[in-house]
Image (cartoon, rainbow, N blue to C red; front, side, top):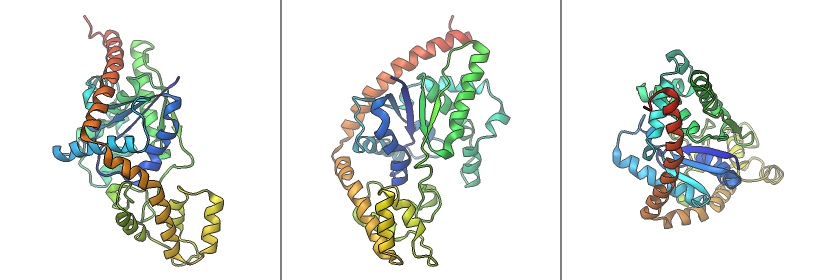
Amino acid sequence: MKRLFTGLQPSGALHIGNYFGALKPFADTYATYESYLMVADLHALTSQKNPSTLRADIFGVVRSYLAAGIDPQKSVIFQQSQVQEHTEMAWIFECLVTVPFLELSHAYKDKVAKGMEANAGLFNYPMLMAADILLYDTDVVPVGADQRQHIEYAREAAAKFNNAYGETLKEPQGIISDTVATVPGTDGKKMSKSYGNTIPLFGSKDEITKAVMSIVTDSAGDRPENVFKIHSLLKDTASLEALYESNKGKYKALKDALIDDIEALVSPMREKYQTISDEDVRRTLKEGSEKARHYAAAKMATVREKVGLSL
């Protein structure tokens, strides 16, 4: 089986954009691969400075994966910080790439433009991400259309290492979802906690209702496009077109229909989420991190030998 790698930062309560952009694509495909699913807690340190919040977010993101139907017996769910080879590999990559190369990062420039602190961790983020992927001889990485550069950085890091020290690292391929490239938020922009335009994934029905009712609509048309775009993630095009045609101009009715469809999707997952204990999460991460360390340590031993660190 080919190996698939993906990860999600523990950065607060998940929203439906996280579900359709990362959780669902992984849940739909992971069983056909040897799948590694990383909780990217080291990446979260670029912005999260509150240890209690970070711990709570780590528990939350693992609960979310389990509630979405991911079976820890059929995938390796692990905590990035428990596999120290990630930071060691990242340092080696940082010694191979240039500052101008890292300055090309779209994610870095976008986050700084939004007011995020331009710390060195954020700047070097692409090389830690490359280490995450390349440590496991990854074949494929599912990413959104706006994340293509992450794969390019990983492939470039592998190529630079292989050119310097001999063929060692596999260059991964990206799996780009054309159907769910960018999940729109309540204001029409990309759904993001930083924009405050999210619909909570495990929120109560009242919280979902409040978020959906806040979706910006275009009073000039018969069909509220922002509502339709979000709704298209949950229903097939034919039935959705019929629904919106029969409720032309009835914005509240269409928002109510969207609320019902989100609730139908979320309710079973929300119930499962609430039954997953802290001990369940700890056990999942302990077992998964041990498996990840076993593979990463073997790969890192080869890397150390190649670069001259092994005596």
